[in-house]
Amino acid sequence: MEVEVPVLRNVFRLEVNGKFGTIALAQMAKYEIASVVTMIDSYYHGDVPVTFTVTLPNGKKEERVKSLRRMPQQRWEHIPICEFVMLPENVGEVTFALNERGGKWKSGLIIEGVSFRPVRDTSQASGYSGDS
Picture 1 (spheres, one colour):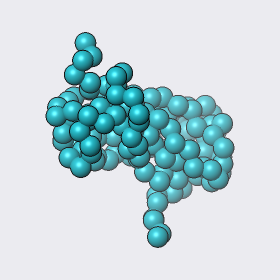
Picture 2 (cartoon, rainbow, N blue to C red):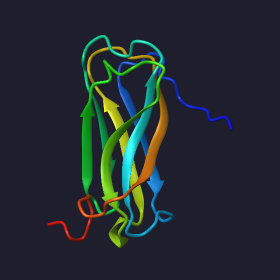
Picture 3 (tube, rainbow, N blue to C red):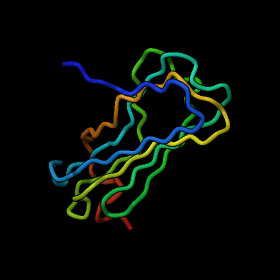
């Protein structure tokens, strides 16, 4: 199976957005949301971090800031953004974004996508109804 993925060629401002419907996810299961990326050449000419943002259907927003400067080249990396439990209030659309607004030109980043992977423990996640 072949999958086409976007390759960042040469941009000044990076902004990638997407969404995913959670209706098919197993109820009461805990999931990790991660961005899947790789580098084909030197991405940064400085150390400007990338912001990964996820907004759950219940309105909870999670952010992860990470520098890609030292990321290995030619190897897919799963960058965890957040975890959540699939409860009724999380049925709907998860939105996600990858942003970098530093003043440097960027190239060489390949974005495969965003992964939703099941996690074993369901006691300490965003959106869990027992959290206060």
